[in-house]
Length: 302
Image (cartoon, rainbow, N blue to C red; front, side):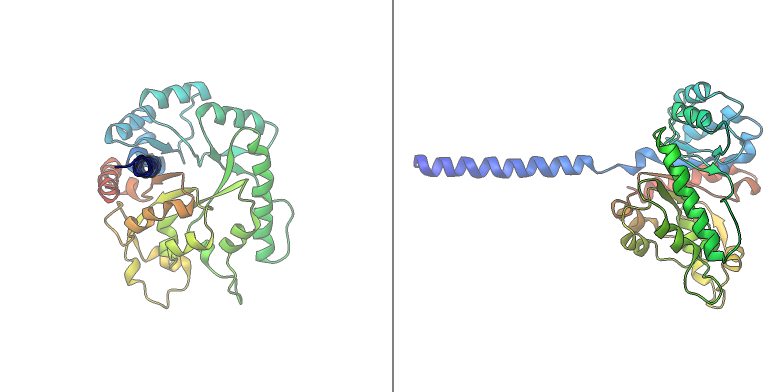
């Protein structure tokens, strides 16, 4: 081999090696969602009412790594105490539905949220003013989300907006829906959409199509499953009728196909997700339901 050929050969090896290294870095950077499966604690609210910390211990024992509170408050614990409790069980709490309350104590609450490790929150408080059309009311809600987003941003947090199915009900005499307005009117830098995938699916939404239409907007997910979605008759246009016609079940036991949805997580902009089964506490063994969802979702994510 001549010196010229040798140099050319070595150059090709270096280039291909660099490409391989880059590909390896990209592969390593891809999130392993199995390692951050979260639970919306509303799923086990009946147990939290009896043994607040013990319920977190059992959730962690199942394998959950993230939690999101929605009822039972914060167990009467101060922010530092709460963070210590989470640390004891190897849990983190990126988002909450036990939000801050508008008023004189708002900033102190947000300081506490930062201590607990929260990144996303709600802030209670009715949108100012009134009157006008239903569309006007939704626009006021969007404006307030932006307003609160500016406030919570100072503490390293972001506002979240969570949906059910009625937000996909068109206004009377229109094709426009409340969810469309919230998406359009909120600032992506201040407000993250927490997409309840289960309720959106019940509403008849194509989840992956939603991601492509508004890429990067869906930073938080509620991973929920329901049986009966495929059998909803076309005449059930009313979203509350649709919600009452299905049965919520553990993830993997219903009609929502989560494999392609998680494959599109990067398009969605998803950063955190949590399992939720609203009716688990009414079925007699909410922890068993939480365990079933964890096991099924772990298999889906393999």
